[in-house]
Length: 247
Ligand SMILES: Nc1ncnc2c1ncn2[C@@H]1O[C@H](COP(=O)(O)OP(=O)(O)OP(=O)(O)O)[C@@H](O)[C@H]1O
Image (cartoon, rainbow, N blue to C red):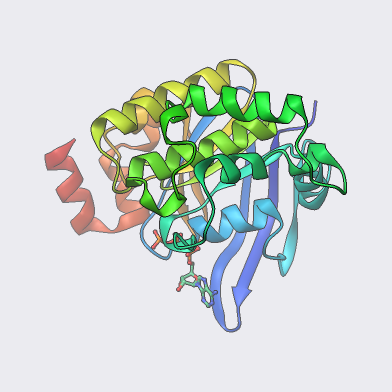
């Protein structure tokens, strides 16, 4: 069976800045995997390579055995970007953002049919944003914005979900809502890859954890991967000591 995500020896350079250097990662359906690494370690670049938004200088990415572009076209993959990467002033309502997940199902006219409206309503309900459907997307709180993008992926019917720091600037209640939802989606067979700096939340949420520093240093059980001596590999000694005290 093809892995949901198969990243094989991927190298990405931005000019002369190396962002990924031979990164390799496989993730199967039904699994939640947490991506952990310091600022600039290549996490966002890995997401963009998996989405096919940056082209690797070397190596390959396959989604369900096909290309990222094919997965985007079929709606099989969805991406919740870092908040900084979104123009929150864009004049779109929450409903319209979630409806964007249905575009692949609508054909050229992009006219929503009953089933598209139903899918959007159901997705908004699942992320508890039904009451905010008509609000401009920028007028949501940080946690609500993340949930709106998760709803877009749900409406789309995505089976691979990428989330870049879904818990950044999010309160505990929104975090709990998002975690519960991700677990439900994984139980339904979705493969979920998320990056986070919240190492405390990860063992409870994720089935697997990955340490990244331009390449994958370690991949496995979060209880093992997040051991202080392993974090030291990815973050350096000082951070390891801080985490040792906090964990
Ligand atoms: N568009 C770009 N042009 C040039 N360099 C870039 C670009 N995007 C990222 N980089 C560089 O590539 C490296 C990896 O960046 P990336 O954003 O993937 O890291 P990250 O792990 O997501 O970081 P953070 O935790 O801060 O979000 C960094 O050195 C970064 O400065």
